Length: 347
Ligand code: ATP
Ligand code: MG
Ligand code: FE
Figure 1 (tube, rainbow, N blue to C red):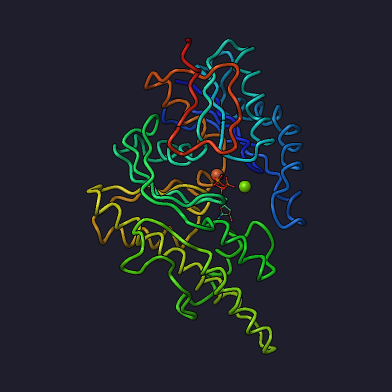
Figure 2 (cartoon, helix red, strand yellow):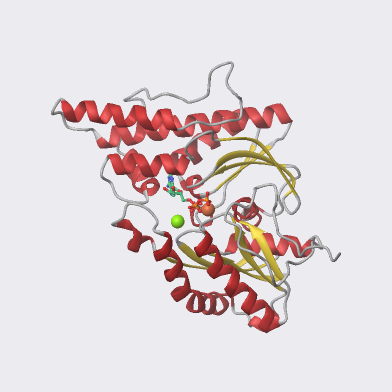
């Protein structure tokens, strides 16, 4: 199926076009620069930016794909989770396009989309798929027997998300926002064994698949503060590399363990933090050692984009899932266990 996907859950206006597992277009307009001076995403600014970028980005995606809107088999959109006002812009736009074109509408889950996008890179997902989802708002281990209908959480962060930790540490180091890419860059020049930062929830009695990054964040902030108070220079590259190592170590250790425990021989990593170069390298190393096939999309498909939404929409159509209704709501806290929002059954 030929599907247009619209993503507006945070600060990226993403519009993608896919045909089945083939990526045809991936247009992204980001309002990240408008938020930078506030040190985080400002919801009102994001919503307004989506509104302004929507039509040009849809037109750019259709042109890039070389398809006519009338050839589409459906329009998919992120229904949640995310910022309510931002989601609403995408959902409204998707309804308008789908209704005007006479095509079915599919409201899909942003988190399931972060997983499904790998079909564009590596073909059909294995079933079940073991997925490590690491992004700005989420860090979970998920087992998905069917990405369109059955996603089961094995564990999740009990405090901060991995991406949130990157963003906070970047702020403490005065490196700007978003923190992930810049920490990744500094870490390349640093020594990842320079400082032994704590690995949260890795004790023998801790929940095996849960994560905690708040203690790590505090430990890094204290370490930096002690240096500053002593009038010493902060070795930014070493701090970045050591912090990043602590995150990548825990994520990969637990993901490999989950694969082993569940008897799954594949691991998918998705979400913005999956763009991290050290996480990718360490996952590659540890999966190879454990006989696990690693699937990670190219970095541009890991951060928010519309192609991932189109990919999940195409899978919904391929599997004959029911479309959404014209009253599809934007649900800021749509649970990961609901990959899409079908129209309510008639009573
Ligand atoms: P969610 O998907 O949970 O709703 P989101 O959509 O805001 O959150 P994504 O775009 O999926 O998040 O990911 C953004 C996060 O990824 C940010 O926290 C950012 O710092 C982080 N990130 C991006 N690139 C990298 C990188 N190279 N290394 C580490 N983190 C990164
Ligand atoms: Mg973003
Ligand atoms: Fe995301």
